[in-house]
Image (cartoon, rainbow, N blue to C red; front, side, top):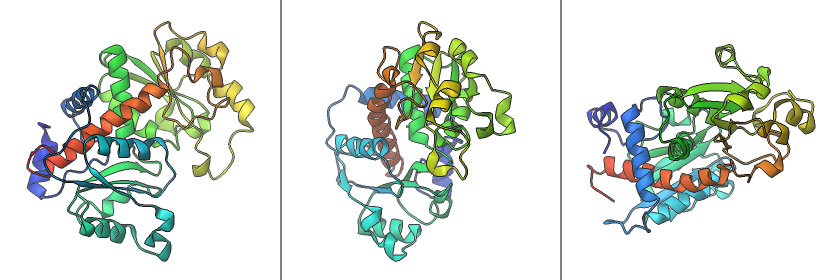
Length: 314
């Protein structure tokens, strides 16, 4: 169980235990969660002591996160309440708050939400009585993606102190980048960025490395997808130009350190941010990340339900 101000604050304010960002998580909180996720890597499916219902409310397209949460929920023995935004009362004008309160009233014990509005959860946290897990909010945060990335890096290097991580690509529009930049630095990693300078703000330029330098220095090269759906203007001429100027080509991969790894939150634009042949090369940990996503989400679900039920194991 977390031993930090997170639990104390939740009890004082009498609100459920939500996982919305990692901003308030201490290093101990994060390491505890990663240890719990690692524990789940070797466990069979669980049989809960009580019956719990989980609902996944995804208002944006998703493959990995949505299915990963569902797999995690089923591995824990939770019953999954299915929700499809396109066939729900959202189409009739129902608000996000009313949708969540409806799901809660019907019997959900926990809800996972992905939504295009940044910090959508601000209007919900003090109005609902069940835990909310943020599955991604606009260009804001993606805490469980950060945690699965952290687990993957920790499995590879044993820790974070002194590890150089380069996050490369569409930094400005990426909630993965925003979540990872802060938490990795707090854990002791040296975090740099690369990619089109127009997709970064001034605060990031002090971390900037050209891609040809980034590949030589990175222990972890974390590539990002171009978030076309969040762009208001086209900032790069085309896929081939982007690949040659900012992508991970085969030539650049050959210049990487012998023990360095490639990561990507996916979906991957093959031949754009990275050469298609590199997606499954020896140094790629992309599909390992996806596998770890299930274990991390099991740990987060388990944590939320325990914290919201007086510390009673599910």
